[in-house]
Length: 225
Image (cartoon, rainbow, N blue to C red; front, side, top):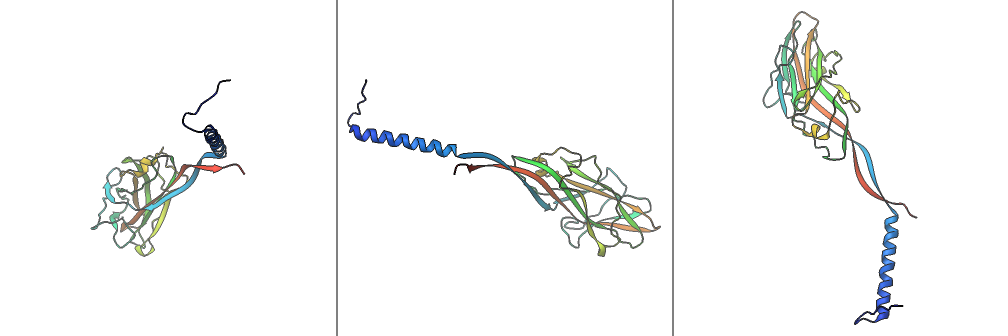
């Protein structure tokens, strides 16, 4: 049988070192065998976030919006975007974008989008209703209208948020989390005059959006006793 000679090292010491190394490797294999690497999914939401841009979009309606300085719809406060309506008129779209989302760049699936508009009329007699409420993806207004023709509160004192979409509503679109993070993601609203014979001032105080998504990350789990 061939022999192995350890030059310059006591052979007993070398054999012990080899045994210790083999024992270490054996323990390492056991530890690795007891670890399970798994991809764990979790539900999450981001928001509600407010916009940082507001504008009139002439795609629909006839009456443009007026915006006070510094803004009309960035926060729920005393500043409001307004549009003067008379019989049979509708506002142009009020477009809000730049909601500042920062969803994960990877392992992220959009599940739903909730849009809330805080709006009112200014007359106890002449009514405003939702004409169109849509999502904006990549700067393009979507084809799905979530308006149900709901009356706006009659006066600013009764002002309230109305909710559109929700935790499982994708507004007829296919989304990536990058679409949500983009500066040209947002929503539009248009209101119509209905009832009465005079005029009213359609008023929007604030817009906010909440996005629901599923994320995932990797974790190790010990499976041996």
